[in-house]
Image (cartoon, rainbow, N blue to C red; front, top):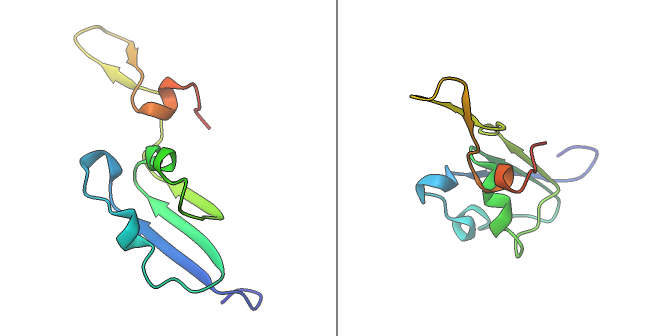
Length: 86
């Protein structure tokens, strides 16, 4: 509880591996602030029916350096392909 409000910390498994289950993650929440912690930020594109106040993702970068082309930057993930990088 922060400032009299319940804070629900909602963990979402890595969405890109199809192991996440939003319905399960949102089970038994109390009224309050919803903080979502996830590895893959692309899950936000599928969360229209899920309320959240904050979403923190660890796997967010503008691209991935790919070889064999030296210094070739490949856009990874749907958000980056939509030019949403922050």
